[in-house]
Amino acid sequence: MQVPLEISFRNCEPSEQIRAEIEREARRLEKFFDRITACTVVVTAPSLLHHRKGALFKIDIRIALPQHKDVIVNKTHGDIHQHEHISVAIKDAFAAARRQIEDSVREMRGDVKQDIAPERGRVARLIAGEDYGFIETGDGREIYFHRNSVLDGAFDRLKVGAEVRFVEEDGNKGPQATTVSLAA
Image 1 (cartoon, rainbow, N blue to C red):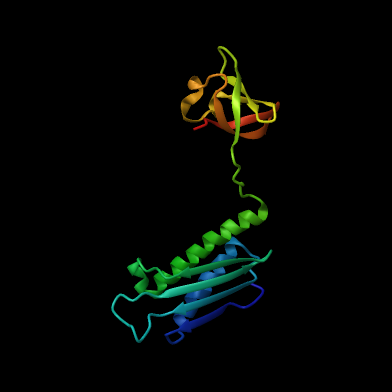
Image 2 (tube, rainbow, N blue to C red):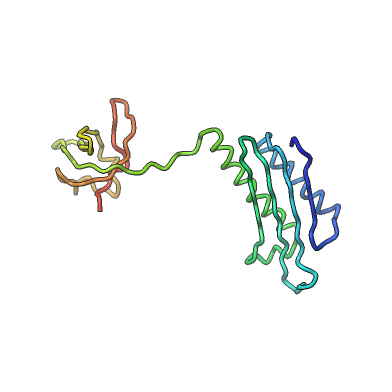
């Protein structure tokens, strides 16, 4: 980390044991991504005024990453009674942070698939005795598709002129349609 780890405690006295556990978890995060800029952790114990059996710890983590990406974890765990134990609450909060870091790293690398809205078209031709056909797009182009690209085994239900939805991709021999489905 470029900036030292910051740990603060609310409603409780600082504990060297808890501090060491948080430092250990923060070091583990750097194994997943070694360019973490900063990490701030706030441990909030159940309020002394409202202390009751079963009160849960809250762990807040803010991790700064390059490209102005921040990972923010606010773990209240209102429904997880194991979080009466601080160690469990810390482990769960850092596990959530780790998942977010992994997602952010994939996004920074460009490994995240973008959701592509399906296009609409009509079945232009079905090749008799073969397992493929062509879809006419709204702009008049014809896109190849194969039986294996048709969802829910609906290839045999397709008719010329049927409206379909599909995603266009570059194939070996030009554009082709994937995830073809009958339009509702």
